[in-house]
Length: 145
Image (cartoon, rainbow, N blue to C red; front, side, top):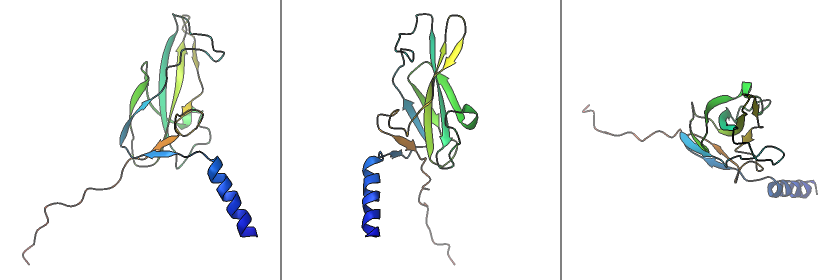
């Protein structure tokens, strides 16, 4: 009976938890939708400057707060809706983007970070895992001994 209950709980959890894709890439172009309104839904003013900041972190090691940029690796900023991310070493990486809004008075505000592995933020949740498979040896030959 306990095994049947455990199996039922595991199956229910598998149905509820979102699937997560893994992209095996050493570098990737992360893309997102343009942000054109503030948190209340009002359009930005013509004098507002919108830029996007991209961050990554080791998804295996984790971080205590994925909204704290002090715990993240800064990749870069762009006004475009995409940025090339080159991963510094092999692990599984989460990628995140936030908006940096500068108004006409040079006041800067930031959105929360949107993360690749969160279903609310991503079209289909994903992480990156740079490939670590070496090439096969070439030039095999007899050593003559």
